Image 1 (cartoon, rainbow, N blue to C red):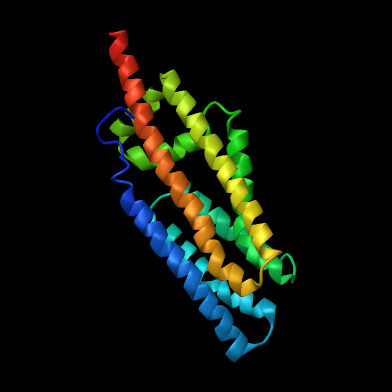
Image 2 (image 1 turned 90 degrees about the vertical axis):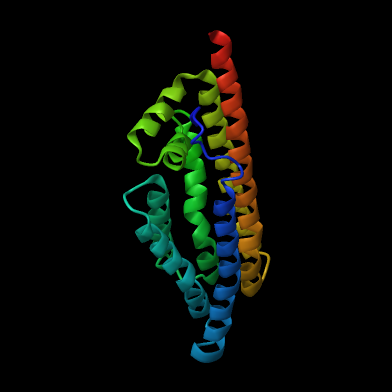
Length: 224
């Protein structure tokens, strides 16, 4: 969160939300098609059908990580998520484990967000700097300097806390869905349920960051 006009506004966050909506629709339809295609033409095995259903999300995640240049925070999260998913594929033959696998890293990252509150700067500070300043040295310097403002520090910690609970809740919700609903229903429903929570949290994050910037700017003005 910086105090300059270059900061992303809620209006400018709409492309991110539109991209998420596209991903939600694709991840709710293509895996289901692959699931039934596998059952019909490859094997009646539930495990094989779920492996086939996981192909598209995995390829999409790898493509997204490769498309982003450099080891930025987003790339790191995507790559770790892929590694976690691959390990889960070989962890056992329980078909339900395959449905839960996408949320293993989500839950772990949510716990890490809580742990990062004990560190000098919480993890969402680095995500905020990546989205707001990118690789621009001047913007990054302004963003880092803003940490000296107590309002900004409190804001980063609150954003990290909110994301931690949302990510952990996402993991718990997926587990509940997997163990209470049939696999095809989980494949079709979970992207919408969990994607909606992500979109709402992103929208809240940008709106809260915008209000926080105004409060911090007002505090600086009052001190002069």
